[in-house]
Length: 152
Image 1 (cartoon, helix red, strand yellow):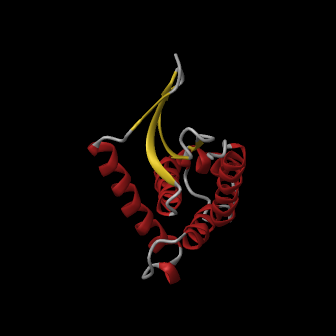
Image 2 (cartoon, rainbow, N blue to C red):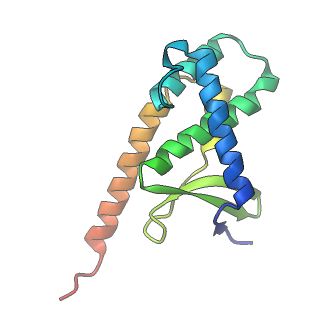
């Protein structure tokens, strides 16, 4: 079975919105100085670091990973380079963000991205990773453009 990419359904878009609301509450709980500001990656980084330092119960991880991951994905989408998609293949179906369709097809699976950092108890990665991903997208786009045939 090959990979298929489709648009999120209304239900999936609603779930994304719910996770963004959870992320706002998460920041309010774990980074109080950022609680009255718009949701931002630096606030999420601080909240995630504080949450990790609190030695959270493992059963909390899934909810936090989803909320922080979706907020990270939303930051990529708000950059204008990515859009939400549903990716299905022989391993299952997952929510992702996609940039450069047909020109590099950059896919990021935000919840999985955060899960890997949770497993390593890594903090302070969201802002840095955002910058690195955006730099990679620009590089891939520029490379693609430099190989595009010129019209006369």
